[in-house]
Length: 92
Image (cartoon, rainbow, N blue to C red; front, top):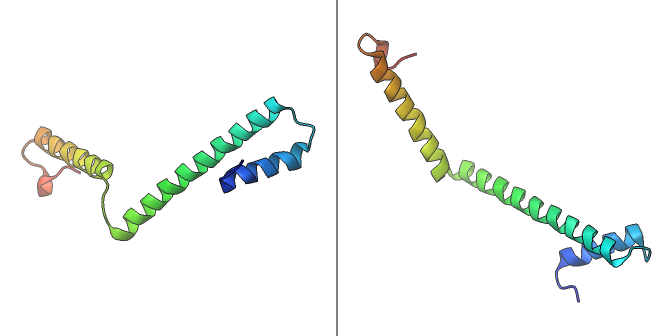
């Protein structure tokens, strides 16, 4: 018995494409391929939602914060290597 709406939709899609001509192996492979696509689409959607939420709230994720820290440390390292005589205290 199919309980999820996705399972029912996949079964309907397989039935509409193959009808009664598909053997068990073909139905199984096609079903799992479609489930994989559904999972991928969900993951992409969640990633986009998180990114949009971060933009809307102005929050910075840990990955973004680490990258900004690395960039700042690179600038400090460039400044220290440049030595005296750098305008405004930062290299251009």
